[in-house]
Amino acid sequence: MKQINVAILGLGTVGSSTLDILKNNQKEIARRAGREIKIVSACVKDITKKRVCDISEIQITDKPETVINDPNVDILIEVMGGIEPAYDLVKQAIKKGKHIVTANKALIALHGDDLFNIASKENVRIGFEASVAGGIPIIKAIREGLSANNIQWLAGIINGTGNFILTQMRSKASSFKEVLKEAQSRGYAEADPALDINGVDAAHKLTIMASSAYGIPLNFEAVYYEGIEKIANDDIEYAEQLGYRIKHLGIAKSTAEGIELRVHPALVPQRRLLANVDGVMNAVVVSSDAAGPTLFYGAGAGGMPTGSAIIADLVDIVKTLPAGAQDNADSVVMINTSKAVIKPMDSVKNPCYLKLRAKDQPGVLAEVTKILGDLDISIEAIIQKEPTNLATDVPIVILTHEVLEKNMNSALEKIQKLDTITDEIVRVRVENLS
Image (cartoon, rainbow, N blue to C red; front, side, top):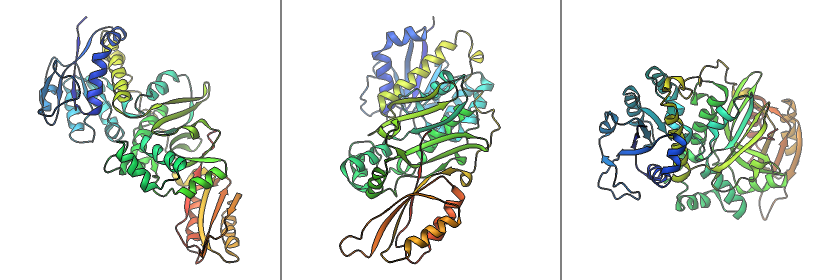
């Protein structure tokens, strides 16, 4: 059979690893695909830069149009990252009849539906497994392995940088700033780590997983997200005392009122598997009606795991080519046909952890509990610490029963205005994952 020729946009960590994997495992990959797959060209910013991978057998250019317009290229891998020029280049390639494999979660989350529509008209496929959770085949698991199921909910640790920070804060009792510096020195966090720690990266990935799980349009703007910047060491300590660990989760849940899409720190019971996923590892739990809860765990980033996912998509696409891609175009259709509504965050219900700092004087707790009670918020547990040294305020930790988000927001606004509250209130939702 004819060799499949592949071009790649970007030859950084992920692109180089993809090239290495394809070369090192060439025979096994060809056996699984049914024909040989070869990267024949690559577009890079700087053609003079020394590469960590062997580029002796591929053509290198700094002009993207060279690979996009090459009629001998069957599939284009996009690992440039970012929205532009990746978006425009991928559209051009699709219109030239080239199949696409991408690891670009922002591109898919923000512009995926547009690209899928164009690809459907051109009878080409888009593979995007590598855009979520690195080497974990979570998209294939949702869309293929669990295709017989109604998915009730999924929850995942889908950003390794954030998980590393929270793990180190717990295990070393180091501050957020200290651990962030460590993450940067180890290469886990970028010099500008904003997208990792503010929840945007995880929200991109949740957008893609939820679309795959529920058939809803890719709607990043509908995802509620919070980062981990406000989590302090004492929050982690109090959570442990209450039987929980704090994890940064992406959650999609099907309810009678609509689908919840949210990313935020959460108290997870210590006995749950997700609570014990540490370091830079990722994990996703999917709960479905027939299969029940299933856990997917592995390396969520890095060149080799992401390269593995890219080549898995290459193999899938190549296997469809003899029959004609239009007969197997599940990656460009059937992803955005559902009319399900996205549930507003105000109508979500969760138990909550609250940490307040209040003046050390009588009546403070009574004021707080009255506000909570007036809004139908019941309390499960309270931890009140004694003041230390010459401190004039004390921490109060409250664990509530399930509460409507709207009511909790109102309560927090009223409590924050009390003269006796000396610092910003910390609220972390509780996810029992059951």
